[in-house]
Image (cartoon, rainbow, N blue to C red; front, top):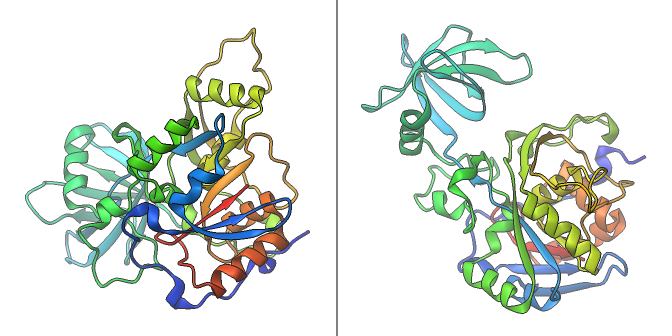
Length: 355
């Protein structure tokens, strides 16, 4: 059994992308044949040449919301950094969120926010797992109006900036993000390479396109810290897959097309679907669920055939996932080739197509 250290690698800091490529689809693309291990170096807009009519491209349409807030303690004025993680429940007048907090905090602490927005929060509970429960005094539309005004996109910690760029709110968002699917604190980054024009070209070629929703959580930034990978506990994320998408997955499988997941989030969602009771005699409904599926070498993929993905952090659950799909030795070789060719890594970086 592999250990976490087996998925470590050395990456020069200058290869960590700090800004996205423009246009989006002009990033580089490393193609990896998971059967032969053959590598090719192209650009992302060349992906269309490797997809076939009848293939199904599945993308995560979750929208990133500005989950990073800066507040101040009501009594002392000390700064508190807040990362909204997920809503827990509605309170009598406000609503309660699970959050990460930066600064010295304790239960009962009152937090205020700058401006005339009247937003306030009280630290209700220490969850004893690194997260806290905060109760905000606003809810629903009033809450989101303030969050969208004062919040910042929580860029990953490896993007080093003295301050966030105004353009990050658009750059760190896919062009197909659904405003009704607000809930991600990090972008499904493989989707950042797509343009509306490129998606139209796929459709014109006969490639089917469907969407699902997985709200990316803060755990996506967390490295695996256990010595043995099987001891790692994955974070839970909410997912929703429409009946139309499930039906298209089934039809694609039946006609011999490939299921191509865009991003590890789409991959994990598809692999979490319940297909045990699905047949022609049973009505297919939308599936909504929380998933904590952990995919690492030895996993047998049930749904996906290929994956569009970015380059992942050392010792992360995501590099373990791609190693499960292509084989660890092939991924090791591909990553070393990418480093040698000076590909750009991580969220704003270049892409891979594992097929």
